[in-house]
Length: 98
Image (cartoon, rainbow, N blue to C red; front, side, top):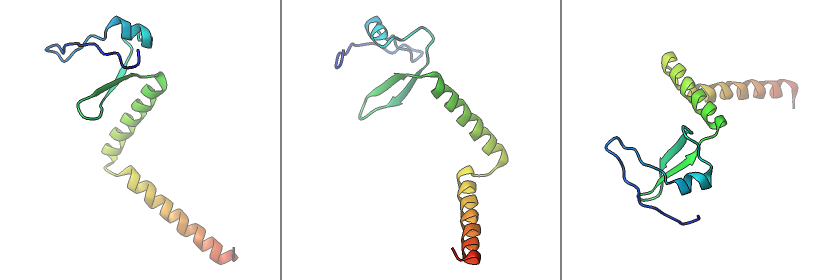
């Protein structure tokens, strides 16, 4: 089914029907989540989401909510922490002559 294509229509609700041949070939089940992204040019790319990906997405969502509540930039804080750790290590090396 490599380059096979089929014409589908987008409903007024933005829904499409994935033809049964594609669903069977890919092993898609009713209610299974699919990830979607814009591909190159005018492509829309869909792929099955596994449970691990769902867990990671949920973790990232919670992380973003927590970071927003705390008002900080987690990446900036991480860089700052690493900078301080490098300074401490440099002082240890100076003191002990390593």
